[in-house]
Image (cartoon, rainbow, N blue to C red; front, side, top):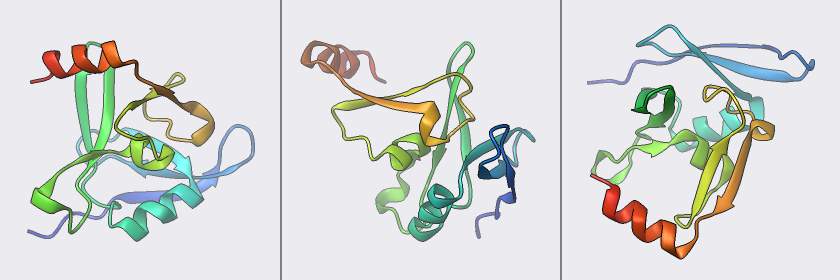
Length: 122
């Protein structure tokens, strides 16, 4: 089955910077990210089939299965944009659909937290 292309438009954000607005097919919600980051996702084959995943109440994130990924593995889009490593966590500063770099931060996860996360993950 061929992935459904995402509907996008380019326009200024409230600060006047050019961003790509991505309409999520499943919900009609819109994510936004800088054009350079969108172009990088296109190069990686991560420009179709975005998945809105709910982790817990009022907390969700966007995942994608890049074309050609081994075993059809999905990846969190904010991790791709920030280049976060496995021992790092990406934090959203506000809206989780706002994937502009200045609304994302990366922090190291302590060894204790990594062990707790491993035990609590499904």
